[in-house]
Length: 358
Image (cartoon, rainbow, N blue to C red; front, side):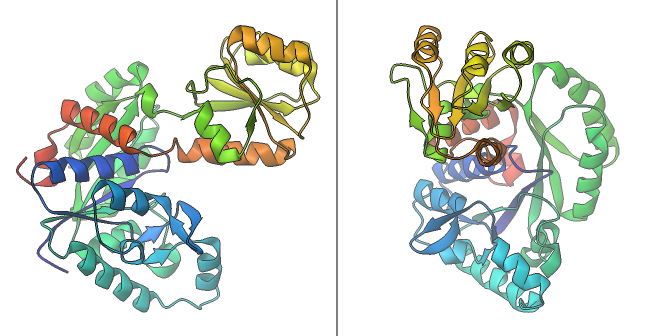
């Protein structure tokens, strides 16, 4: 493509910090004096913008890196459900799409010495048009950083398989969001094993609460929910949800076993709401159906500093929306990118990873 140093950042699955890592690396290099470009060939994190469906991540990159590149060049393919349907029906030309990616990459790389390319939510995304992240790495002559999480030793199969699928393009693996409970096993057993298999490991980044899950405020804004408890703290983080569809006594037993959770339940289920407010791991209530909670529930929530959110949609629809928000992670902004830069500087040889001087 060009002589620009190109690094593609991909991941074993979505929601494990790929965007934050990509933009943290880009801003770190930019601040060290490098001319840095960015692109995301397949836009998958979609929203409506200026009448078109566009991925939010290139918009943030354009702002943070102060780029003049047009969004349609940074994101040449909008990988929407409509695009997928058209591709399956044979109405998208894989050769033409590859040329589009190559041409856009040349535009994004113009005047730069480093191009960061953000991959898709999955290594399989793009298979129907022969544009997986591995395919794009070949097209752009890019090295590939594979971002992965780690929970149990069984995850090693997936990590090794993903690494092998990238072949000689693989620059290495970066583990992100690793808990204290698994870091020793990862460092002592898995990393040496992977390196023995010819898979370089660039570092292990710890789980950071400021980057995990979403805040209650993030969730409320994403859902368009009303906050019924004006004084309660909406900056608290939530990482999972629990559905309150059982009796009050059964609900309390279940809620006591969860942590950092939002409870989703009908706005008319006062007994479930009361039970949820007695569990220390419940950080917020999300009430569905547009019902107003009982005054006693609101009073108890105020005592415990637990926000109550309310939406008009039914419980099933709301659960799907909450799951999507939690799956895609918290809102990306400059603060989250700055925090990721700190983690990278503490745990990774960034200059070696980027193959640049910093």
